[in-house]
Length: 114
Length: 109
Image (cartoon, rainbow over all chains, first blue to last red; front, side):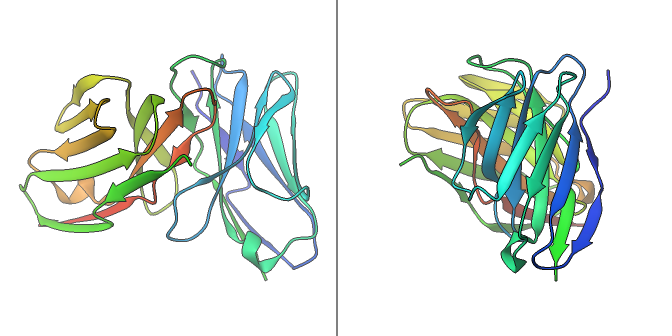
């Protein structure tokens, strides 16, 4: 049983650029959630995908968008990067909705915007 | 408003000490998670609770649904326990996790 894999692990981008972060969900999991964790803060919910459809979104602007593929892996895209987008981006997968279930977290992608 | 509060924010201990980290939340939940985050950033799920108490090795997690409060205890703490411990809850009628800001624990030999 594989865990959640995120790529890349580290990334440096320039303000105004676009970035794509990737997440492979754990085998058997069909739900992926993305979180942004600023330095010294707890993770903040960005959005969640269930069976290739967005299922809930946090308080993030439209320049944050996502995608989930038929194999349930997912991408997070951020356009027009701002300095405040510098953070650790975490992906978590789980099996299904509406039930008490566990999450498996990836190790995160640390994005630095300069 | 759905809120999660943790205390203390920072905690230092000598090896062997008993440690307690607390988490309080504002409204009804379907599940509460205790997570461990090491300096590299990766998060490990320690416990998922909806009632009662769970134990794994030196770690014990309890939850009181009526008081909307959970505690994570570490017995016989060790320097390798040094990490950030995060409480996260799933409130009723939502599928997203709301995280506390974490408790940074340092255990010295």
